[in-house]
Amino acid sequence: MSIIEKARAKQQQKNLETSVKEAQYSLEKESIKEPIYASPKHELPLDKIGLAERGYLIDNGTRKSIKDEFRKIKRILLNNAFGKAAKTLHHSNLIMVSSAKPNEGKTFVAINLALSIALEQDKTVLLVDADVLRPSVMRELGIEEQLGMIDYLLGKTEHVSDIIYNTDINKLKLIPAGKLHHLSNELLASEKMATLANELANRYPDRIVIFDCPPLIGVTETLVLANLMGQAVIVVEESKTSIVDIQAATEHLNENLALGLVLNKAIRSHKDLYGYYGYGYGYGTKN
Image (cartoon, rainbow, N blue to C red; front, top):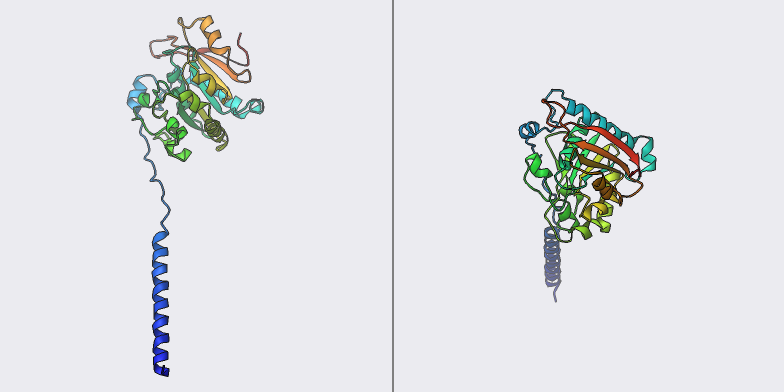
């Protein structure tokens, strides 16, 4: 082979190697996909007019006695969550709201507590619809159902942030219940739920998390949730809830819970839809 032929063959080999490298680089470049980021969720607007008409604590510049009643209640809860009592409570900033039986106003109290705490200057609040049997928080707020807690526990979404929604009230966030599921008890008793509760309790030092739970009597899910909480608010309807019902509802609760009772639907004046008074609080006191 002549010198010219050798040089030509060498150049052809070099061109072939360059083409192969370029093809490999092109394939590698195509295979490197840009990271997929979930599109940010839109802020959920609350039906503030409808809420105010139904007695909820929308901040419209007026002062009613019901607002002061909830201030008294939330002050105790906040002191327990962030004061000296916090050292004696597990997950002191996780608060369950329940009742002995349905229709005693637990959701009304849970939402109003969240709205009241959202007015705090240095605190935020996360309202969780944990009534996985009859969820109603989103409906009460005038919001369509969204992906929620049960969906997360089922693995339908990977990140906790996917089920936390901002609202048009600056310091209020929501976690919906999610779709109904026949294994709700087992899902709430899972290690994944315990991890979720721990994350919600510890991620933000200024946050209160309120769980609107199912009633206590005749339901097993609430006692499962209670084991993850630091505080419990039991709603008692005036002239309806009996002492026997209250005892039955609270006798199996964790003795380490800070336990309080709220007297609900006590008509006090023509100006207020509801009155709240006779609020008691204690630690493991069920008598």
